[in-house]
Length: 162
Image (tube, rainbow, N blue to C red):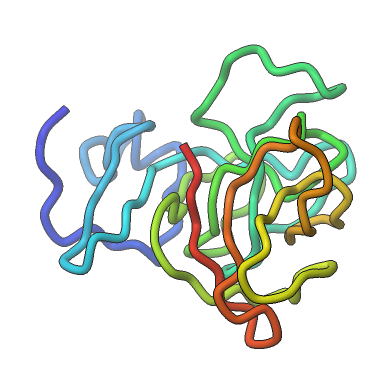
């Protein structure tokens, strides 16, 4: 993996940009980018899932695991919580359609588009118990913690995804 300078974080990439006639105009799937203030991003593919949940920039996404079983893929994400294993991937930086590629933020402060299902400042957050595209307060030790609420009412979180 090489260094990425000046990633276009809000651009949606098609498969043609990765393998087709426009090959070489997109980062590699799984590539990471760290910006000037320490936020970390990952280049992934978006899947709408069985519920055909559209991507929304600023919403949370989860690693795609149809039927709740992960095949170990960490480069395909969805906002369809029912097609995940409850493992947060990050915050969408754009709104790709099914099968397109995009950047997600995996670490650092972020302002979400959709409000948390519940929570207060300082709460550990998880996809478990939430709704599509957002997070909820973690109630169990076994929950996957993927963010901490910085200002819950303003939808500001500290993203801490792998």
